[in-house]
Length: 507
Ligand code: AMP
Image (tube, rainbow, N blue to C red):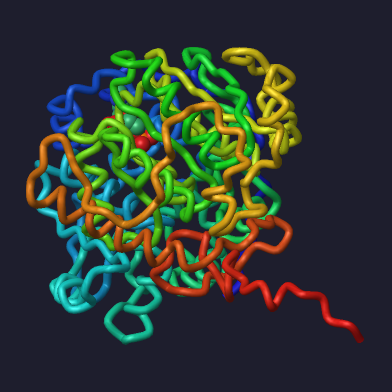
């Protein structure tokens, strides 16, 4: 089914803050929803809420350009709840569908329905990978008012004949640009075509690359466009610093440890970003070895381990969370005091997303980015994107000792040998521990956390056997695995290519 475009997009790019109503009561939400919002302690709608909710309640399509942390989840959950008060669910025919790129985001949206829907009697079903089909099928059988799903698992259920999408009245596509990065767009197109033409579509994306614009032109009807903050801006409340480092992984780990120690009690909790999940594993183990209170989050961990890590981090049981971009994207973790970029992100927009984890809602935050000689062009791209120069923390790269000017390990020259190389010129006498699987020593060990950490290490072992593919936007991947919500899937030998295969052949 092809969808005719009734009008072009309303391209107002100005933030809509000035003209917004000032209270939730002005937005047209139902009494039950308003009561739940009041109980949650929120008094003023955020700009995306104030901008999107009145239009969503009128049944219009909405194109929301907003990052996570702007309150965008409530901007679709609240009007959906109001709308769902009329009518009831039928078996296997959900009334509304929310598509999320990752399991964690899907689970977070479910939490929002629990919080704001506490005065409603609605059935919410979560269809995500890594969990048994049977329980999910039972929920579908009973009839779901709200279906929250990752695209792959949704299509799996559809193909098993357990799901009809012809009753969907409201479709939400959240984090569309991340869906694009993860190769989910063909799935999204397919799902959109399975849902009636008369539906309402609420579409959210932090950035609008051409592929996403095309998608909105294809599947949205005369949408109201609401843009609350440019994706290329970082909050003014975040102190950003570049930190020089030698290029070897142990150099960077030593720099990170020094930074964490120097920040001391100023760190309430911190997310440490790595570009590849293999590095997430390695850094996580190293931090545990040095007795830091750390957890890890990446796409190879099983669902329970990921959720446990996340909730321990949210509850303050874990101070440091090492994460990949995909795993951490959109996670609702309030009051992150620090962000450490262990690797400079290759795509400059990822920098904005990472930094967006701190300095939320006017709070202050700090963001440190560890930079090696070979990262300079990525730093240049970031500075160009955010339109400002980031200050160096303690002298720029030219102040590095000559022995530290080695090539960065990011994506290059990695292997068993350079991890232990004697010629590293490492400044510290402390021997960097070999990164091997060990039992974690949490500060306050309880059984669940121990299991989660064990699972993280087990998953790390699996991840270490393989190499991430190059994230090349020009050739965005089709997803390989329905349940895979991390693009850093590794193929072939990865970087463990046997030496004999590297010998050039004489023809
Ligand atoms: P989101 O962008 O949906 O991930 O929301 C980010 C955070 O803002 C979450 O912790 C929400 O609970 C919180 N939040 C949502 N709406 C409001 C509001 N109107 N006032 C204050 N905080 C909010």
